[in-house]
Image (tube, rainbow, N blue to C red):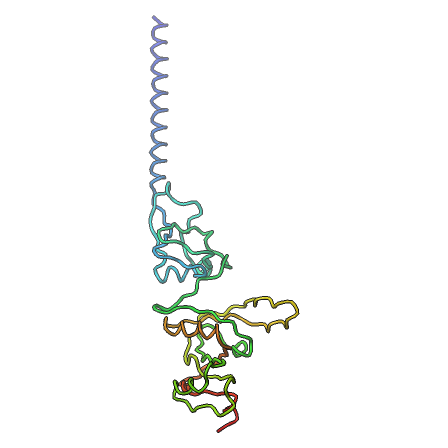
Length: 257
């Protein structure tokens, strides 16, 4: 009789232990499930975030927006806040639309050159100018410049007639002429460049720098042709500067009235 009671008691204890273990496991699973579903904030790129854009600028302009994701789906290293410190950091590369933004995508120096912002409907064209031809170091992105072209016309008399300018004096045939090619050009970027190496025995080319400008398509074609056929020189525009697009200065008229 005593053995039977002990066996029953032992069975009851084992059953209770099993129930407690199941309850503990179930509670733990529920806690893990709740933790996995706990929403957390992470930024996502709504539009393309160009390299070089600060985190604060990307948020302010709506390029990046915060979104809620379950903790289980939170990306490793995801960017959850943009504060005073992180807001000053720059996008190291372009961040594609729809991409979860991680903190590692921002730093102090972009990995590549920032894509320049070309105004709508315009084309970016780069030209190499020497220091004097770009007004030393005084031209910067946002400046407006005048671009002059010095060239050798095929037929000076015909060229003057086409523009309405005075015909060049006798003996000026074959001389070079200078005129305004573009009178108001927006500079959108400046960057140093290495000129094409000179041929053996030739004089080294003067050091120069790339000046990138934005122009409507028709004027961009004029600039490209001028780059290929003439020698270009830039002048920094002042407020309300007016240039004479018809004026032609030639070897014959340089010292004339």
